[in-house]
Image (cartoon, rainbow, N blue to C red; front, top):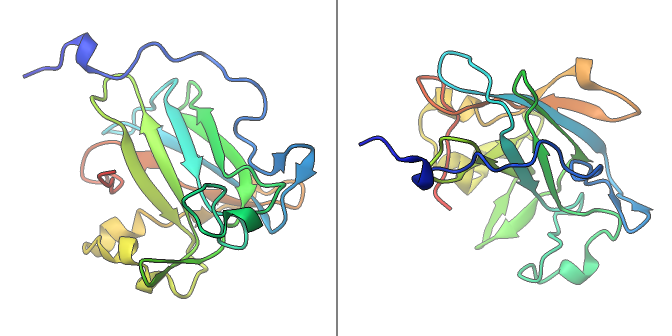
Length: 193
């Protein structure tokens, strides 16, 4: 069955957002502590076709592994300069971009989560949002993360690692590339939320 237009997400996304939604490093006139990074990539359909005007949201802990959210028991200690959530949209070539901080590790259900970013994808033609996680290859302990360990295919696990990209470096911020493939043999692993 082909979903009818009222069953899919979109096409009612704005063409642009207010400045700053994709910069998590500034909050209330303060600047976030920790290592500032740039996260950029493309959102592609099967066959490498870029998606246009796709919404990408990220949420993550600060550099100390603390979420700015009431469900984190340490939220009162969260970095006041770090916002913790951001939104961007893809351009005509399918690119998105965020300025954020390298997140810290934290304990979750008795297990350590290694540094990561959570991403959500909303796109025209999708019937539900897609959620995934980007990990950082430099983290020696990423093999112990329970979410990463839930992906048993080694090739799929590699698709969850953001790649260091020096072409993105700017203003003392380290660059990482994380492409999102929505379908096909190279599809990014997505999780139920």
